[in-house]
Image (cartoon, rainbow, N blue to C red):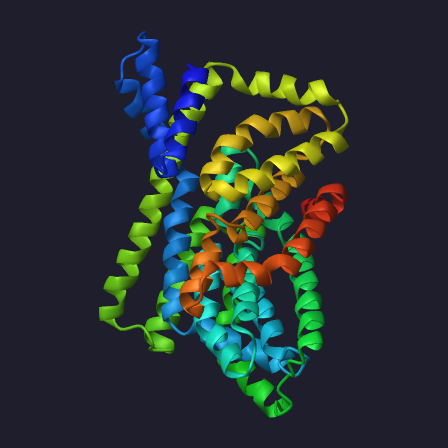
Length: 425
């Protein structure tokens, strides 16, 4: 069954069938070819994959992100970040990275982060003489922080798929996220210095104080949500509901930038995004069940350990695999398929599962900015109104830095494990 399923999946992907449908059809074909199992099992396994309480966090975090994008929170975060670092060389590019770090702490989605900050900062950079390719590349790469800095939808999916604490994953994401954000700030500063992009010298302390006052409610959101999770007040799933209620109240009654008419579009867009993710999870759950039944995880483990029993070699092979997979597969589907296969091997080799989760998420986050299916690239291209080819050329130095970041996070596990170990004491 496994052989038939993999061959079917490969053919369907080569025919450009969407990943979710490819997973479902490949699973169906394998069951039909076996002939010893009723097809009702397909439906049962799809519903079983969705019948998990933690999955409720996904639609709520998506809805919260949409409310924040429309409710003026993202604009206020941009203004506050600009007041802090806008005077630096390449100020607007640095502002893009810093704003992405702020927005990531309340969004959970890479594409939402890219769209929210890109719609404001890409036109601003172009207006101030920045190359449009550089502006788009900076925004697309900064957007990947949306799934690395918690809360993060891929972290929720990994936690469910690999049986790892979502709270631990959320805590573990902070230092890698700040580390990657810092490396991107250094890169855009260096590139801006070479290109002659100057900062805004007209920012005063009075403007900084005003920007902080306007952004205080937006900045309080991650404090409330993440503080509530780590303080044991509510679970990550319940935190997603708190995020929706908070962003709704702020956007509708305080900032008053969300009208009742806007809500129809917000709910509609959030429902569509949620349904896409849930269809992928349902079909991938069925796919994973067949893999487990056919003992594919054990065979994959034997394949990896046949090369070497060294954790260093294993992680190197995993990084290459994930970078390749991230170029062609959607992040959620990749995690659902690979996490149950690779995490047990990592644990057997003495690798902390939380650390391994961060390796997977950071690798696959890079897939969001690599052709041919990098979702952040398409968002940035649409906002900047440029072709993918022009954006890809500007991405080369960013790719080099991201690969270096991945290697450091991989082989310095304390970046991922130190904070969770401290907070558990």
